[in-house]
Structures are given as C-alpha cells and as structure tokens.
Length: 106
Image (tube, one colour):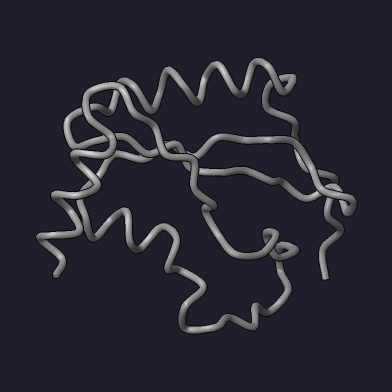
C-alpha cells in the first residue's frame, strides 16, 4: 500500500506540483511548558518523511498568542528546489519571518 500511495503522490505532483500541508495539528507549544502530545501529532510530517518527499517549513506569521504558525510545502522526490522557492515566495508575501513574542522563563 505504501508503494502504491508513493507512486500516486509522485504522479499527482509531477515535476511542478506542490502540496501545502500542515506541519503539526496544533499551534506550537509555549517554550518550557510540558507538551501533552497525542501519538498521532506527528502524522503530518511523518507521512511526508516516510514517503521520502522533500518538504520545507514555511512561516506564516504569529497566532493570537504571538506563537509561530506555518505549513509545509511538499514536492515530488528530487524537487527540493521547488519547495524552497515556493516557501520563499510565500514567506515574502506574508511579510517575512517574524520573531515570536518574548517568553518569560518558568
């Protein structure tokens, strides 16, 4: 099944297709706080890693709590430069990288 899924994704993406995919199912946790994680919280990046596809994390700004938001740009195997170029364009259109709010130590 995994090989069939990989082949379908490769055909779908072709040489110039890009898939926009969440990186994580919830906003980033506050630094220094314990994280209550579900076993499947890594599924979004895990699927892409298991398929061996290139992915670039693209920053999208900050949420209402001033924590970073982002998404993955995914392309077919061997098309790493495409994910980088698309992420760079999106980042520039969103105002560039924004540092997160200052986090006080616990």
